[in-house]
Image 1 (tube, rainbow, N blue to C red):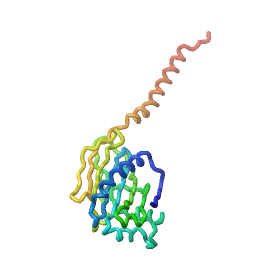
Image 2 (cartoon, rainbow, N blue to C red):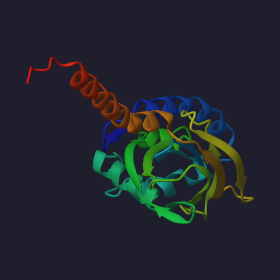
Image 3 (cartoon, one colour):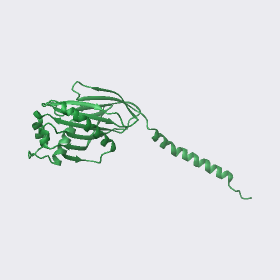
Image 4 (tube, helix red, strand yellow):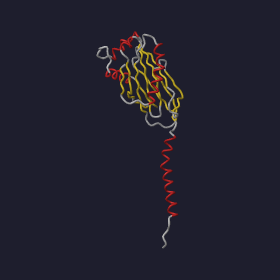
Length: 223
């Protein structure tokens, strides 16, 4: 297994990976041998979207997929080849929130050995994160589209239950091929942030009151 990390993972990414590994095994074992199964899972946070994509080729298309990954055809997948392939896959994904395009950055990738891919048992895993712009409280819409290898691929797309209680998924809509996913979600304000903003004002008032009381109670010199 060739693994590449482009930045440190968050705890949410690790949890997402665990869910992904458990769920992807069943889907991969059931897909047809002449298909490239691409299963995407999106986790929406208040300030970012985390993406986990599993890519599992059937035996009949495994050599075509390996030819893209193993660029020098030496039957061994190097870290550079794994990173380049993950970046190529990621470049074919498109995201936007409320119509504003998002830029997804590669976080982690794992490419299985070539022999496992040929047996139809190898799953490439790509994890990425897209930072969200500052968003107002209320309803928002996230769009995801996968345009990678439509000639041989079948697609799955789903949104995980949000880890933050500030995010509530209202609806998910997919096209018939599940290459496109629209997610309507609600964003609730950060109460802790409101408290933090209010603290300086309250502290200033308390200091002013203390100074006033001290002024009135201080010993006065006789004239």
